[in-house]
Structures are given as C-alpha cells and as structure tokens.
Image (tube, rainbow, N blue to C red; front, side, top):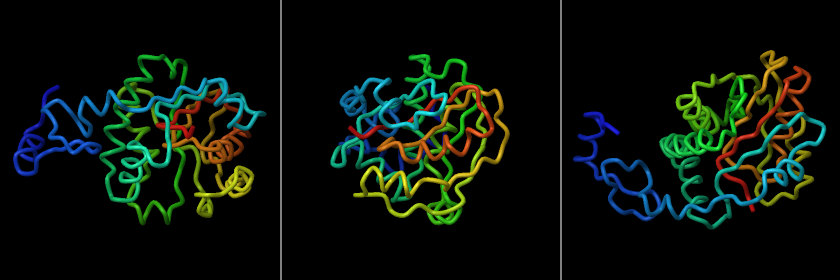
Length: 225
C-alpha cells in the first residue's frame, strides 16, 4: 500500500502507535499492529442465533453479521469507546476498512443494493462531530462500491441505555426512527457499531418496513456476547 506524503511527514513528526498495545506501527500498518489484529476476539455466535434472538421477527431479515466479540473490559471495547468519546473518528475509519475486507471475503453483502447507517440524533451528532455508524458505512462503501442511502433520521434522543434491561432498551428505542427515503423492492444493509440486545436495529427495521424493502441485512462491527 502506498503512503501519502502527508502520512509520511506525520509519522516523522508524531510516531504512529498501535491503539491497543502502544507499539510503534510499521509503515503498512494502520491503527493496530499485526499482533493485535491477530488477537482480536472474533464473534463466534452463529448468524442464525443473532438473527432470531436479537432482531424483530416480523421483518424480512436475510442475514445478521457481526465481526468482533464485544465484552465491556476488552481491548476492542476500549478502543471503540475511545473512538466514540475521545474525538477519534479515525478509529472507525480503519476498523471499517478491516470490516469491509472481511465482508467482501465472506460474501455477506451479496445482493445488497444500499447501505443505511443507523442515524444519530442531530444534537448528539453535533456534540460528537461525527456518527460512527456512518464512518463504518463510508469505509464499506469505498471498498465495495455499494452506495450509502441516508434513509432514516432519529427524531428523538434515546435515554442512556447502559445497564438497562432488554425490555427497557426496546421500550426506549421504539418509535425513535423515521424513514426519509423510499426503499421499495431494495435489499438494504443497516450498519451500526455494536449489536447488544437488538433494540436499536429492531427500531430501525420497524421504521423502514412500511417502505417495503425486499430484504434486510444487518452489519455491525461487534456484538455483545
């Protein structure tokens, strides 16, 4: 992979280090060193189980795909939180590139017409400066050529979900998304960072179903175990 002059100069001024172990990165490494990439915890929960147990059951969900296993005190949880709350959108950019490569290899996006990132309430996005789901979708789109469709908005803010029960999460998420674009007959892929109970994804699906998509695929960076 060729490096831009900007990348080379930046590396000379400020050494590039792995976001997990702190080791200096090699020229071809981005964000994580090869050792930490090899040690990433993969999500081994069967796709069918993710689909049946976490996603609303009255929707034409073709596939649910999560790359990494998320536990609260893991290294991957730490860098995802750093990406969200420490002003590091670049973390989602390089994780999105790796996710895209995996999706291409597995064929998980076969037949998908458009990517729809889970939207963030405008006030939260203004404060953070970016939507991590959108950055992941941009990386996937760049690698696959599948266009991004901003097909929904989040009309109201969701109360803090950490520590809430599954039923509470579903109650909090219900009705907070609204479709904004027609997707009739399309196979869409909803993109988000973490799949927990499935409340957010299910609320998104409920908002999009009246537009009659042909099929829905769910793509997330990680899933809780």
